[in-house]
Structures are given as C-alpha cells and as structure tokens.
Length: 233
Image 1 (tube, rainbow, N blue to C red):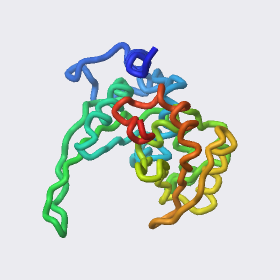
Image 2: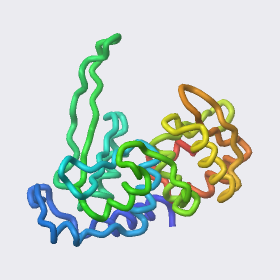
Image 3: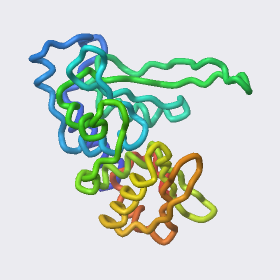
C-alpha cells in the first residue's frame, strides 16, 4: 500500500460522516460537545501540530479548548488536507484573509485559516502543553506521546530540508534551550536520530545527514504527500 492509499483511508476514518458546509451548526449544546471524541491518530497528529504552529486556546468565559489552524496560501493544499482531517470538529470551512501590506516591500500576504469548536476532547492537550494556560512548554513525558505520526506533522510545520548537506532542521526557536535539548534527546532515544543543536534567533534541532535514511523510512508512509520534500523525498 502506498502513502496515497494510506492517506485516503486515514482521511475517511477521521471525517465520516461528512457534513456539507451548509449543514454545519455554528453553536453546539453541552451534550453535543461532550459527544465528540478524538481517535488516536488525530491525537498523535495534534501532538506534532502543537509542537509546531497551530494554536490551542480557551476563549474568554469558555470551559473548553479550541484549535486554530493557519498557513500562507502557498501551503493551501496542506491546509486543506488538515481541514479534511478535522472538518467534523469545525463550525465552518477555511477562509482566506489578507494581512496588512509589508512595511518594507508593500506586498500583501494572504493566509488561509480555520478553527474548531471549543470542545472538551481538546482540554487534555491544552493542559499538557499549556499547564499555566498561557506559555507553551515541552512536556516532560514528550517521549511517551511522540509517535511517527506526531513527528511527521511536526516536521510539516517546523521542518526544513537542506539539499546541500542533506540535513533536516526543526525550528524549535520558541522553546528554551533545556526544552530543545529534551526534545532532541527524546528523538535520539526513540529512533536513534543523531542531532546537533544550533542557534538562529532561538535554539534549533539539526538532524544529521547520517540519520536521514532512518527519518525517511520512519515517515514516508505517514507524512502528507505534498510535504514529503521536508524529508528530502
């Protein structure tokens, strides 16, 4: 089975039954919210995405967490893929918005976004990554919750492949040095991914060329096809 078949099955598993846009409810009752549950594959994906770029937050006067997804329109295929996975958790589909003109270039950059309902099934992830409700941390048990699926989607958000030296960088700039060291050690302990730490406006993990075959074998069947270039495929 190739990666396209795998993702076809993964998407179907996650979103059946699919509701048309005009049948989505803007607001849910408490009972309706409590009926939502995350399958394990989506939990794994969210671990990677939260390490990366998506926001998980509680709105004012709301007891439950919601997720906010966003990408530049250059990555719209990836964003729509994420929506395919999470659409049953969302009150509406992706929307395109234009940012203010860049202060130097004057160019207007567009982004595409969507968000989920505020649901109790997201609360455990909020507590795990935002124990104080404000600052994102690397959980001490990250090695236990990080799976190949998590790593694949983390790389989709924060990974860069360097063609010249065949290395992969994880842009972990938002974490402390101690947290980045903990992440890197977890990757090495779980999958023998050799690394160095670098600094570029924050601490980053650089996965060495000699570990690239391990990374490619681990992720090639679980990474979204449009993002395989992040691991040199």
